[in-house]
Image 1: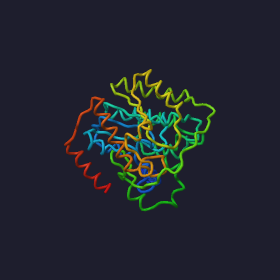
Image 2: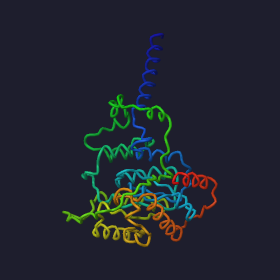
Image 3: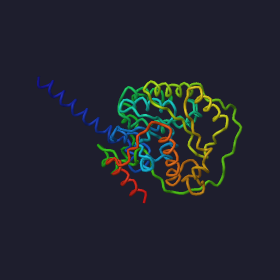
Image 4: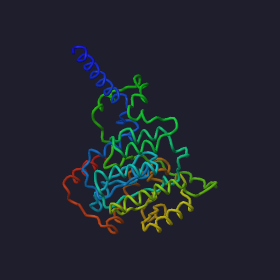
Length: 333
């Protein structure tokens, strides 16, 4: 009996140490590569959003829910991540609908250009999105759909298998945020005040094919069907990013899909002058993303489209959101 108790105690201690090391060695993304902490910040938010954005950096850098609330009283949240691919958007949306059913889902179609053989598929981007998701059926499906040939499922279950070499790289941040997350966004929007103007327009190179991959279409259809099953209006958008080049052939395919599925599609590249975007002042990286000024203009413009064309509530005066707005306005000063 004593031997059995001793073995059990040793096992418990081992499990505690193993679990501790798993948390300690996994990157915290609190002050560096903060994009890796964005997915997890959603879980601490209230679940009363009428608009949910899903997609890549073209949503989390370009659309500010706090500006949209101030402009039109819209409660929105951006579930974006770096290089979020369309199959990842689908499973992330499935997970989101377990927490809340918004009236509108906004999907940025830029990821339609990337199939599973694309160089955009990488473990680094997978980790930024997946590591800090809560465990669920959707996370398991997302891992299986996203893994590169070099990755293993077990390393997502036990991060220590992937990050064991970080012992020499541990910083104060790893201990400070061992059991808590740092909030780096405002309802999923990542503030960037820097200015780097567009100095060169991208070259319109001839491609071997302009057709989107069939699997990308399959996932876009899955997103569409999931929204329809839950009574959600799906809105397709293309953010006004100069890089990478968005071909007319891409646009026509999205327009055709939207028409076939009775969806709205807004290509903001076509209305940059109407929005008031100035590529000399409104981008922080030469045209890939909007900076704070550009995102503010775009968010105001889109907020008016949403409130006028969809059955959304004007929540102006909401106590919680007024507090968030005050914090946001202090942060952007």
